[in-house]
Amino acid sequence: MFRKKKKAKTGPDLTREEMTELVDDNFRLAKRYASAGNVSGMEMSLEIAMEYAQKIGRSFDSREIAEIKLTGFEHGEKALQERAMDLKEAGKLREAQKANDLAVIYGNEAKLLKYTLN
Image 1: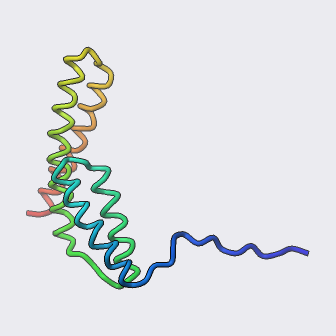
Image 2 (image 1 turned 180 degrees about the horizontal axis):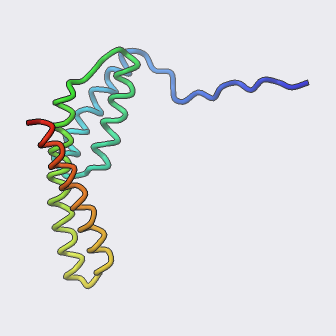
Image 3 (image 1 turned 180 degrees about the vertical axis):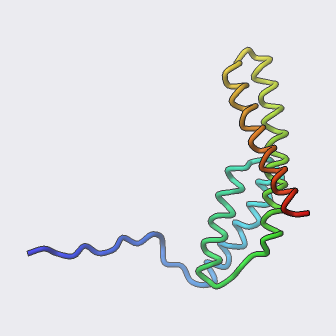
């Protein structure tokens, strides 16, 4: 006969206190990553914070999230523009173009967030 497969757990069993700590830590990390211009780190930390916040019935102010993202995209744009210049000077034109293209995307995201915050 056929046996029913058990559902795979998606993560460790955490207590409410551990989830609260995870949310707070990742929210702080998101702010730190945003200030450093590390957009992927910022977005991952925000995603984790919001996922676990939902599990414990906690919500974040959407304006605060948008401000963190704005900081991340603005600083990320600047960092990538600088990286593109360095790569271009080193003769790595293809990588420089990719960095520049991503900087443009980050700049557009920042403009959109500025518009929504006003």
